[in-house]
Length: 443
Image 1 (cartoon, one colour):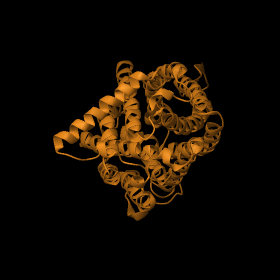
Image 2 (cartoon, helix red, strand yellow):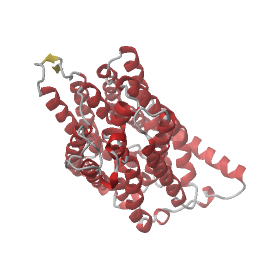
Image 3 (cartoon, helix red, strand yellow):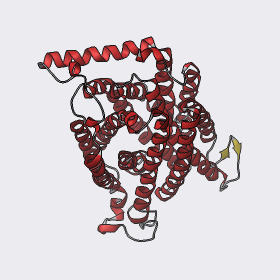
């Protein structure tokens, strides 16, 4: 739960609501080109995560300790976040900024593989869904508090003051957007402080039994050969189970669609609706509040009726939300023209933000519960390595398609359309997923 709390600001403050829109509007100073560059950065990061995730799962499961890996990935998160301080307006270091952002993003994804793999050991199987939902809700609460702190005390509005109408703290210069740029070091410090409970009290290495035949023994060649053999076995198990294969494919597409909306929702609002950092911050807080409520409710129903139904409903809501976003601009809502200066486009997007926050938490929490159900008992890090591969094998697809469609059309609104298609494909593939998994995998 504290990992969710510590890592959530990377998603909330950096990707969606503050740094992403700031990068497009101020660092690049060109919304269309900025959205395209942002898309390429997420594409490359996604490919690298997809390549290394299954290897990581096997390597970690076959080693006596997980903590050194968590320390390594935590350092990637902290360094990647802190460097964003150098993202000055109209920067000449755009590529370097995106490189460090990608390093932090990969650190988050790899650390999540390890923490997700601990989920089955946190309680009885019947409670895993509710534990997952409560953990995600706790993370959302951390995101709200972190976002509120940034909005109230650091991020500048158009007047150069924060939302409290004060100068940014610590003497940060609003003319150079130092208050907004502080979001990078702030996220690094937040993660550093709130991972202390994790490293003090979580003992992942005492929560599992290491198979001595697969542990770190022998020379380097023998160790690597054993890991590669395990990886091939993992893919063989996927081929044996139609339910597991269908779930990995389904989650591959619908999580990609969700990531696309999270990654580009704030950028879209800033570019198409002209929202300020302040409006985006309030938008984010509202979305996270609805996310907490929906995720707690989703965790309850996950425990009662299983994760598949929760996932199904969440994907349908995600598709409908995408259609509303696509049909909304300052000139129209649901493709129906509105009067100039109408507040309806803004109200429509506020509603979409609430829906995105609601389905984002429930979908991701129930998805990791479903992976526990589909996985081979006792090999959960490997399973979540494959899960991360599924989440990243096409994770480049949403930002890639958004970048391409944005480039071809020259229109931010049309550029967001691929996420709807990806969510629809995920919904269709969910049909072949067995709610209780394939029993033959554990026999």
